[in-house]
Length: 284
Ligand code: SF4
Image (cartoon, rainbow, N blue to C red; front, side, top):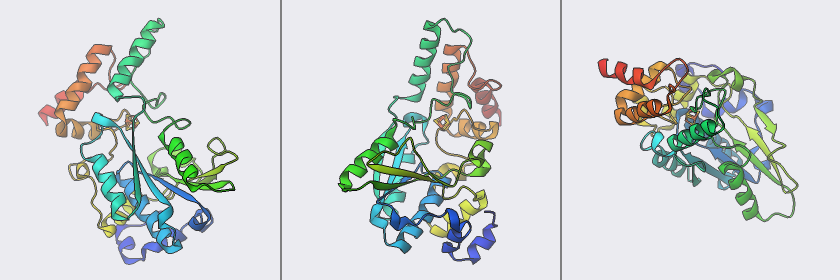
């Protein structure tokens, strides 16, 4: 899907459901519709789109919004915004906290474990090759909430669960390879069939912002300050530009990351240190 903002403003919102009709599920066929929300722009646009489809199908009461709170490393106001966005549509909201504890403590802990094993070279920082910082897909909060929600339905047949994630193909080659709609066998069992849906997989960034602006729902303030992505203020996968912007907006948190670099003896990214980001942010 690729449309300009102007095109979006001229068309009905329901048009977006017709872009890839074979991949758009019939929401009425699902007992539970779980929408993952980081409160970032992609989650927000997806939520607005799913809300429109649910309204048309008369199944808004089956939607639950889940926000995984990342704690201190997350942009201030994110969890509150996720709740506000869910409330705007009248959806049930559930928040879970990182089961691994605070991210910086987890990194410190990983460092200790690596050193205890005699590994003095592997950096403890997460990376694209070691994304242990994200929630555990197999035992994490979403799986547990699905179990809870299916239990609440108390059905005498296998429950059908639709799990909606706001990933976009443009974000990475890995995401581009994901199917738009597919049953997840590892999340399914005799009591439930879990289908993962990426409703905005083929949307452009313009599509996302057009959807948000048309909805009139509040978006996170960090975008207006120059951030391109939300989640952790200092994401190991973020661009230098976003990291610089974040360091200007959250100097105390940037200093905390830089201090951890010193403590661990490894830079935040293989080719970029937080100390450099802090220094550059101070001079721009
Ligand atoms: S935002 Fe980045 S650093 Fe934070 S949990 Fe996600 S991948 Fe890891």
